Length: 218
Image (cartoon, rainbow, N blue to C red; front, side):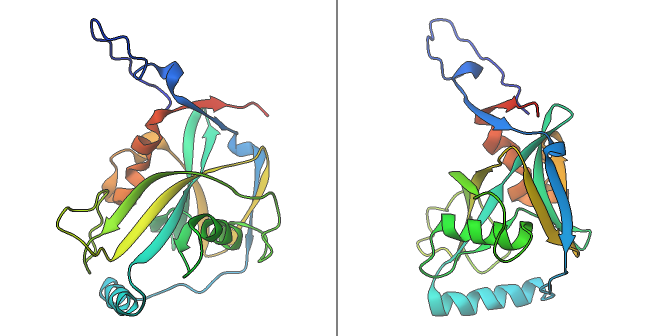
């Protein structure tokens, strides 16, 4: 949430616990951005069991599935908020998707953000600025569980999802399909709220804890 505890031990001269040594992240107010809608897109209605069967078939054909997701932060009420897509008023997702064969993570994420959050297929607007990889989640087997580490006995994981920080410019148009909602959720609401948002999204505040947030006035 931008508050960093300072732990001092006698005789320790390290600056690693000092907030001033954190990486500063500039974020802009939610009011700087325009939000609109476009035509609905078709949704995948397969069950979890069907999805895992498809994952197995794709793994047999192409190997491990690679996905990317965007961590996009804005300011509201002097608190960092994470932008999330909500599908059918129930499921929360980070913007992103599957990496195509031969495609880089960065190119994939820019393509997904342009198609899901921009006005048209041409992705009108400023170039998406994809930053560092914040974390990785692994699916070690054909099951629903994901882990923020690769178990030591797993040599051939079935899926890997990488979370990348995406920095916003001072202004941008967000245009999303009508059957999606783009929401700004405060980090304090996400933290350890696995039941509502799932393990990946609820773990984002911890991934961002190394940053000090610089709220930019418009």
